[in-house]
Length: 185
Image 1 (cartoon, one colour):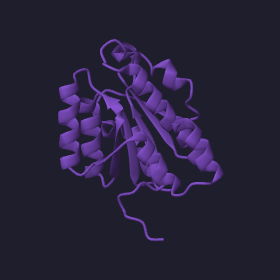
Image 2 (cartoon, helix red, strand yellow):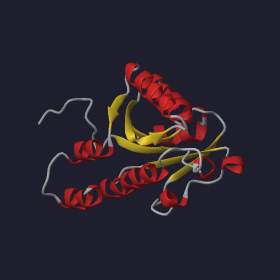
Image 3 (cartoon, one colour):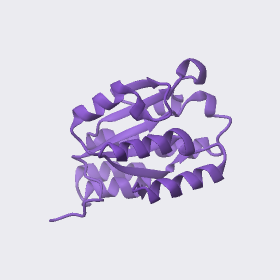
Image 4 (cartoon, helix red, strand yellow):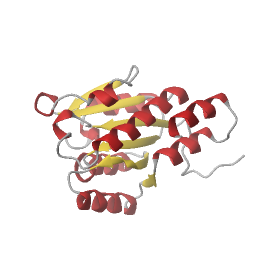
């Protein structure tokens, strides 16, 4: 069956979790919902065998990835960075290129800073970016909303956790579907 090129493909996608670190915990409006949704993405990515990349912005000052997410991470690539855009971290870009995959499932914080700049730079480098809007946040909701609007206008595909996962599963009834379904219901 021919599928639309803007649907996620489990053979072409990677998961990128950007800067969900301890220092932001008290500043973000809905950390429990954010970490739950990102944890679902992680667990489903393990089932779907997607590469998982995690970045930390200046971890010496902002801390490590929050334990709710770190606890469910399998073997994954962790990249420290100082640039707002993940693409400014050469080791990250080398690892992403090495996967030979062209779709990036993007989640994390902050939407108007690191997520926005990463999305635009990924687009500029030929990647298709699927922004998981129920798995991103900013300290101020208006900043998040403006960032989503800008990224979508630039060509990012707006998505959500369940939509992204169902696109990659393609059909119901498989063992992978049943495993992922338990995560989202």
